[in-house]
Image (cartoon, rainbow, N blue to C red; front, side, top):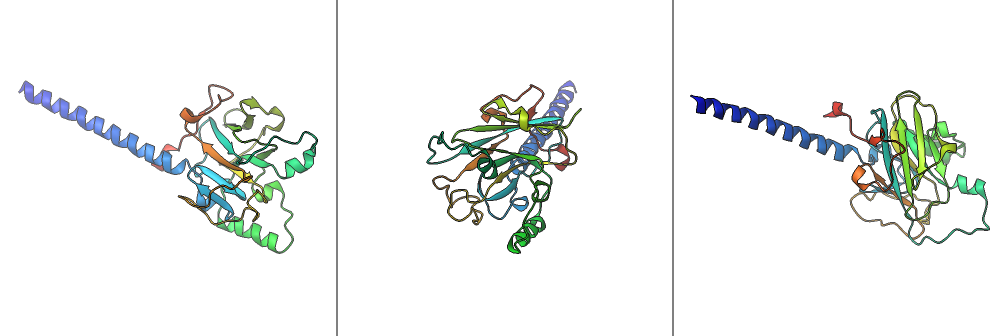
Length: 244
């Protein structure tokens, strides 16, 4: 009888272990599928190859930021990069054509159709609030291999912090925001592909990055981070448990 009880206990432990393994596997699949650039929430001119984006327009990851403090990185890729011209000090022009980083509210195809309609009619004078970049900031003169760190906190005072190669950019921090937001990046037009960046989605292959075309790889896995977050409370972004 004791043997039977022992066997029964082993069975219970085995069943519990199996359930935990299945739950962990399911969570991992959820994370891998949602912690990626969402085609349906990104502009038609954005090209997606795995975790790397190029082209033109706004691109959003497919998961909202729900934890108190989260950190992720963008790794810049700029083939054929050359040292900047020290005599070129046109800060205004640099900011206009700079890549923007930060967060954005949820977007859909209707949003991008409205932007295109405004552009086609010649009345496109969108403000950052209207074009989805209100909670984003431009970082000019990016070099191949640069790392942009984004740290978002919800507790106390909601804030978005920006870091360039580990150095905080305090002057462009966003101190207040509300509502559900998603990690995002904005690639400006005329981004080196000779076609204003407008291209078909090439997720899964094809349409490689051309010389001079800035692209960026989003990194959510802390094992692949190049820099430290601004504080230990900023952990890697995770998918909400509620979507399992």
